[in-house]
Length: 116
Length: 110
Image 1 (cartoon, each protein chain N blue to C red):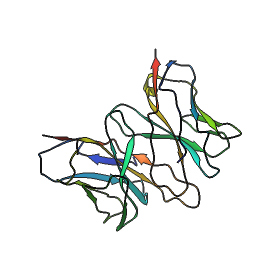
Image 2 (cartoon, rainbow over the protein chains, first blue to last red):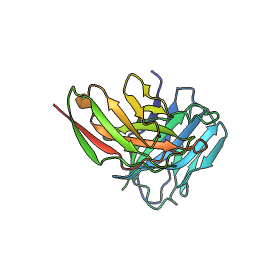
Image 3 (cartoon, chains in turn brown, red):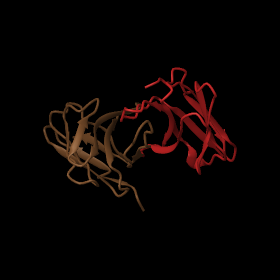
């Protein structure tokens, strides 16, 4: 079945460590996104990528880094510079939008990151 | 993006239609209305979207008023698995992000 796979589902990090969250999609979507969700709040965009080898910062990119070496994969690294990394991280993908039609985004089931 | 206003919560009886309202009185002519839902501890799930015509798919129907200032998502036969937070979102054409508000917590009761 086509979909978006995020792993692991739960992740624990020690203070000062970098950690990488995986996101893989087999939907043949061009665009991929990373969001952060804090308890009781909406989603905030961290980074997005419209095409391989290209990505742009979202609203809260500080302390995060991404790469887009393959169309199927968009890993997110939470660096030690991110002061409050505990959150629910969601990856999404969409077909490339054209004109004024914005294609819907499809989400994975998320990774819950906690600081030990 | 235009701001949306949704009720905080609503209950629905299993097997009955659930009608979820959304106000977006400042919507622009090129903004689409999207609906997503999020079941606890899962990623948001896309439901439906539309510009000005009513839309229907296998999950739901979307009714947009003629002036586009409000819309209603209809779940025709609610089941217990439809219990979730439902988000109404409007998006400008050149904005890649989805801006989720607080949404409506829908509880389907047996």
